Every structure is written in C-alpha cells, then in structure tokens.
Length: 578
Image 1 (cartoon, rainbow, N blue to C red):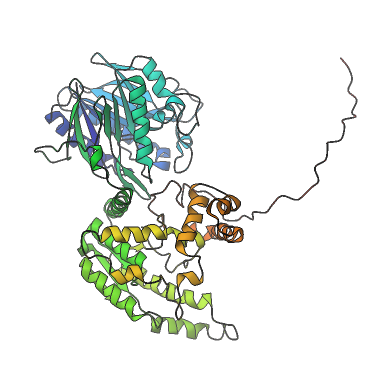
Image 2: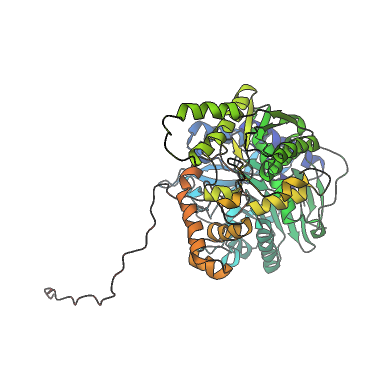
C-alpha cells in the first residue's frame, strides 16, 4: 500500500480553482505510484469558510465539485477529501464536517468530525453537527481509522481537556491498521511542537502508523504551516513548512519520499529532525507566506505601499514584503516632517537601496500646515498635544491610501503588537492598511526578526536597529516617553494576553512594580476600541487580537463591592407536610 499526502494551498470559496488543484495533485500522486491520496480538511471550501456555509448555492456547489473529482480520478486511485455532508438527523446543525473516500467514481465511505472546536479562532459549532459515532473504514483489506483535525486533540485525555470522548482511542480499539487525520491546523508559535508530540504519543501508544495531512497557506489572518507527516516505527517524516508538496509513503517498507507539487522529477528525501528551522525562522516564513497569499488570493492588486520612516517596524515590513512579492511590487513611501531626523531619511534611503525597491518621498509639512491653519481658531488657547501630533500621522495615512487607490495597490500596516496593545497608534493614520504584518509580533521580536533578515546580507540598516525607536511627531520624541522599555512591556503583555494572568500575578512573577503592571493592563483594556478598527493582523501567536480575542468595546471593569461575610439567616418558613 502506497499513500500520498497532498499538502495543498486552497483559496477559501474557490470551488473551481480548488477542484483543479486537487485533480492535478491526484494525477501526480497516481503517476508516482500511489494507491491512496489524502487531502486536508474541507478541501474544496478552504478553511475557514465561515458564513459561506450558510449559502445553500455554495453548499450545493461543493457537493458538485466533489462528485466531479470522484469521476475524474485517474485509474483506481483512492482519494480522501474533506467536505460538507448534510445532516439528515435534524434537529441540529444542517451540516457535518466530513471526510469522504472515493474510488472508481464512487463514494466508498463517509465519516464525520466528532470534536468541533469552538474557542479562540474556531467556531465550528456555529455550522456543524458532531458525529454520532466513530467507526472504522474498511478499504482494500485495510482498516482505516479516518478522523478530522480536532479529533486528534483529545487522544489519551488530550492537551486541552475539553471533551468527554477520544475518537482516536475508539478507532484504535476497533482495530485500525492505519490512522489518518485530515486537518486545517493554523500556525502559532510552538504549535507544531505540541502537535507533533501528540502524534508521536498516539503512534507509540497504539503502535499504529499515523498519517497527518494539514493545509498550507494563509487565508486573511490565519496562516497554515502544513508540516504534514507520517509517524511510523522509523520516526517522523514530514513535508516542509509553508510549502505545497506531496509525500509518497510505502506502508509495507515504511519509506517515504517528498516531491514538490506540479513539478515532476527526482524527489527530495523527507526532512529529518536535524533540518528543523528555528522558531524565529518559522515566524519569518509564516509572515512571508501571509503577505504573499493575501496579495495573491485577493487577486485585485498590482503592488503594495509601505510607509517608510527609517524605523525598525517599517523596515522589517518592507523586507518581508520583498521576500513575499519581489522588489518590483513593493513601493516605500517616505513622508518626512519638520520633526524627522536626518538619520530617518537616510535610513529609509539605505533600506530602499538594500532591498532594491522604489522609494517615493512626499514631505508632509505643507499638508500639516493646512490642517493647523484650519484648526487654528478652534484650538486657540489650548496647549499643543496629541491632537496636533495625530494630524501628522493622519496626513501620512491619507497619502498612503491615495497612492493605493490611484495605482491599484494596498497599504501594508507596519504597527507591532506592543504598540497595538497599548493604543500607541493613531486611528485613521498609522493604523491604516489592508493587512497588519506585525500586528501579532511584539517589538522585541521585531528586533530579532531584523537580525535574522540581516543574516544573509545587508537588509535592515544598522542604524535602524540601534537607534531609539520614535514616532517623530514632536521634537526629540522617543517611544519610552510614553511607554515602558519594550523588554519590560513585552514581558507583561505576553503574560497578560497569551497566558491570561492578572496584574498581581504578573508583578509577582516578574518582580516589576505592581502599579506599573496594573497600568499596562488598564491601557490594554482601554484600547479595545482602536483594535476593533484595525486591519486584520497575521496571526502567529496563541492569542492574537482579532476573532480569537473577543472582548466588548464598551466595558468598565471594577472590583465587586466590599461586604462583611455573614451567615445566611435561618429559614423560618413553614411548609405543609404530606
């Protein structure tokens, strides 16, 4: 038995394009000698399809596309695809999240997802009904333990302890010869390590080879790393992260070879554990893919515009955009004001030269002067402050959006997670953009990315990395005029946002001042209204701002009223006896 793992990059909603992609990969798998080809979860809809699932025409179209695939498969190749299945047992949700096995134009088997994640970025109970049973699929004398994504995550009690059933354990108990998981598991820091450890634990406990096929690519803010793998007695062989590919695995000899999709020729051996990229390299590659797929999958734009200030955030964003799209599709825009230092201008020029991108220079003093004149009488007898500073940021944002509109481009937002957490950003100014590249990357991580990007040659100018960060909206301004040092700030924010710890617990753990921890937590709360109006940010952490972190904008957190603990009064009511 030879199994092909097809790690593909579908576009959400593109039934025609995804169908074409699946058939191309299936034909390549068949030509390489596969008996069975396995595709990711919700293969043809892409993940997550969200409220497209409430469109009956879309649901019918997905069914038609699957039937077309079944009828177009080469030879006797078996094919497992993720899809939608109607729920005939209403009441309940109208659909199941399903896996289908096709062969010779016919549906051989259909199984449904048991565990429906409804936390963080997942909302599957909004659309799907869970499976009523876990059952083995018998095919060509093999007992396949076919299951879907989250069904793995409660194996042996699970890492999240959210469910009462263990689909993998039930399939193993039914005598599965091969466990197969089709998946759409998004990337976040260290997620792959957690996932692979769980796969290894399942293989070791049940002594059954485990096939894991994950989607790759980015859909709006979610990035999927792929890393599809086979875990057998030889260890774990996996496809590269953030790339499409095929792996051909022979069950009898337990050997595997990886191939790039759409390119015939000699394959490359599957990557070993010695080839594992570092966490910072994975972060770099995830952000690169996020930019590339947002630009490619929207298919409506010719270029990207990035406000280049000579600062670290815009420099790293530019460098990532060039990695994703090429220098010819990236345009930097310098917008100096009277407060811009000479170094900021020269650093922006050096960056553009290093990256080979076009650099526009549009001074904003005259524009800001026009605003100041218009507001002069209204602002009379008031001290200058944030309002005047924000006019500069909004002038820059307006220019960037005008360029994007005029030349069929999009603006990439350069703000980082530290600033976004604290509201250290201007609505309708430096918060403008179609996509936040660094919105889930802390400032300290931005510096680490800059060092990594410079590893292979000149990229980020050294002065950009070493000078104190500044918005340059007033004379001699630095970020630390308004914010704690970034190493301190980020240590608090990570514990607050990702680990959900209280200010008191953070102060005890880090040794920082309790009031400082409380002030930071308060600022994060106060600025939810800004983040609700920010562009989507590429998700790379376990808790990003956006759909995975849902807090009300209108709220006021207060302590409960103090009261003296008293024993409840005795119940003196009389009840008739029976």
